[in-house]
Amino acid sequence: MTTTEHAAVVPSFGEDQAGRKLAIICSKGNLDMAYPGLVLANAALGEGVETHLFFTFWGFDMINRKTMADLKLTLLGNTAMHLPQGLGGIPGMTALATHQMRKAIDDLGIPEVPEFLQQIVDSGGHLWACRMSADMQGLEEADLFEEVEAIISAADFIELTAGAQLLFI
Amino acid sequence: MPTTTIDGHVISIDNEGFLTDPDEWSEDLGKSLAAQIGVDLTDEHWRAIRFVRSDFVEQGETATLRRIGVVGGIPVKTMFALFPQKPAKKLAYVAGLPKPHGCV
Image 1 (cartoon, rainbow over the protein chains, first blue to last red):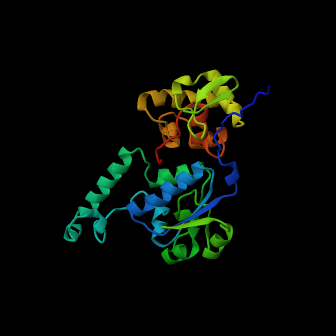
Image 2: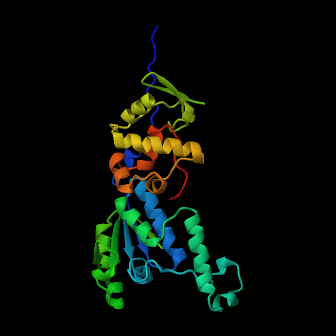
Image 3: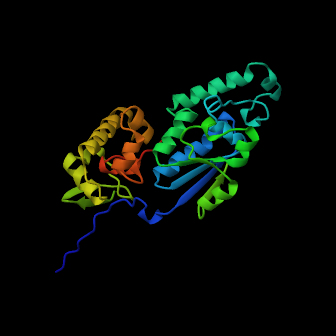
């Protein structure tokens, strides 16, 4: 008579996924469009995925020291708010919508943009700024969030994210 | 419900191997679970384990890295050093809790 030894069942923590890379291009500067990239980057890092964020065009507002803590949400052009577009033009409406979204985000325990970027860097994420956007806006590294590693060209970004999965937001 | 035996502890698990009953957990089992995934438990690991265990009792869900940082006082960087690659999931496993469901 033989006995069978069953191996202990232990979760796989994805060692087979070693080498997976994710590149996220952040091209928007609205408060609502800043979060998708941040949330996904944070999730990817928590799964052990090497993650790079590239900030370009309006996305520069997410890493510009002057604007990063002051992104806004507007009703205008955003039909997903399901409110009459005319309301969006009323003075103070953008401030009100922004305030409400900030509160909703805070209520969920989700950090504001600067703190969220810091959490991403602390989790091992890489932040890169777009050379052309910097030149167009007359900005240098000193004007940007201190954790941005460098201002690089689009070609540099494509090179350093070779083999990565890519998200454009 | 499937069970598995780890170092003589018979535990109820889900399809992946996470404990389904936090009450089956003990510190002794925690050591065995950590050994299974190649983690050597230090005092800092235990601080994280004890925080998520007590937070689970209060909140009914497993703390995310963000919550472990803000409420538990253990910085994200430290968590990645203690439990490399997938800190939230590895900590949940060692602490005998379900995987965290929160996004952030």
